Amino acid sequence: MRSFLLMSACVFALALLVPPASTAAPTLPDILPVIVDPIAPALTVAPAANSATSAIPIAVPASDVIAAPTFAVAPSSDVAARWAANDALIASGEESRSWTWGPQIFRSAQEAYAEAPGGSRNVWYLDKARMEITNPEADPDESWFVTSGLLVRELISGQIQVGNAAYESRASAEVPIAGDLETPLDQAITYADLKPLASLDNDRRAAVRTEFDTLVDETIGKGGMVSQDQRFHQYEVHLGAYDEVLGHNIPGVFIEALSAEQLLYVAGRPLAEPYWTTVQINHAPKDVLVQAFERRILTFTPTNPEGWRVEWGNVGRQYAQWRYGTAEDGAPFDPSSALDASSTIRKLEELSPEAARIALQRKGLVGAAVLDLKTGQLYSISGTRAFPMYSTAKVPIMIGVLNQAIREQRGIASWEDGLLRAMIQRSDNDAATELIIHIGGAATLNRYLRGIGINNTQIDADNWGESTTTPQDMARLMAKLASCTILNDKLCHYALELMRNVTPGQRWGISAGVPGGVSVAVKNGWYPESAGWTINSIGYIKGTPKRYTIAVYTRPNQSMRYGIDTIEAISMQIYPAMP
Image (cartoon, one colour):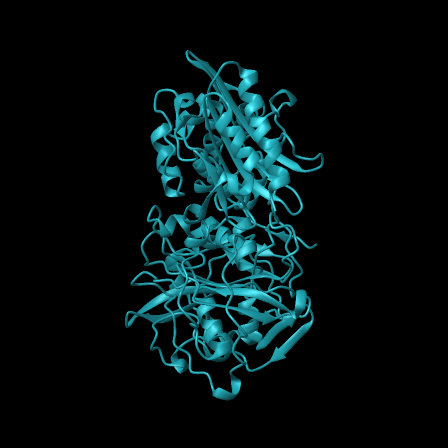
């Protein structure tokens, strides 16, 4: 695997722990081989009124139109989770910025791909990209299970990839990469104009220009003509990084706006240098910096409002129309609707009659929820009843800390890592108190939980241990963590590893009945109330092929042991009952 080296004065916190200030320029994560792997779908995005990435109608000669896809496919929970990791907070209104994928899936299909099972793979198109699953038998927890298509490479080269080394040839796309819908093609920069400048065969490499704080002033014209214009120095855009694999510089504005991991996964490697151009936006000329990456077009419009200056081009919509002659096919689909299993809640007894019987016959109150990650099906008994959380509240506190690091575009500091390990692995209460204060208290955490759809959990402002939740909420929260609907891949895996390595004396509960060798991420809570013990256990079980989250809450129990026995008796019935 080749690494994406950044030679820059700009330092990224790419590791989990923030490196010392003297750390040398870091390395972006490895990615799949450069020429292999498109991904699927995009969403229907409504860009800002002054956006440089408005969708553009494309006239495609009938002879160039490839046959329509065989049939549409519904998005899997893994596709929805990948979408939600970037765009759920935009859809909910909590954040105002450019979409990463888009609000809707407007086309889905099975497209030919030689190495996929049966010679075809499922794809989903959104405004900004195409999502795809090439190997449905792979581990869905891996970052590259859902991939993003190499659409820009195909649009520029005219080579539609139908296998790791198989292509269908056509002309490069005469499709504008930015600007108003009605901009005449002879006045717009198209993908075909980028072809003379793009590193399609590991050629046309550029020299490293990051050492001297170089200002970006190169412009692109029709036919790929490049010139320099010092007028663009007014925007003070400097080159910030260099990709040694394909040999191109990356502007600092892109590096600052996007994490290294996101840039690599979402955009791929840069195919060409960044260029300034002037395009019509709302019938008025605007200066826009554009750069072609393998999967995406990135734009920087310095006069746009904050949050909209760096945007992804509408590559998914442009590509679908170029390939099929029309972008949309069928009714649009909201990806968020594939995330919430609340519409398909079933009784726990439908999964395991014995587990339901145990829950009903034990003394005290028992609430349980089990969410099958393969199907999105939620099974529940008293799953909407509110219970005190006690130390299970440490899971949302952990997620809140990790989310804060993402919002601040940094890694986890070493002191945060130490407190997180103490809080999750040893259930240290002082660490939890320090961390919840660090992220702004209960009000901040409650707002975050509402933003990701955890609506029945209330973090107590005075005592986090007395926070309340429902088993269904915690099963859903664990599902979001397990499928990385929240956070990012690296921090999701980090959080789950903390939960997989709790101290041996705290591995009881939902781990019972799970065979050795199956991964168990667990966090328990317990407290001796005046009426009896409250005993809780939540977690994520990852087997082959069984993948599910589970939350069991019990109170009051005549002893701690009685509560643990109740949870473990239920858990022992769940694993064998899962399909």
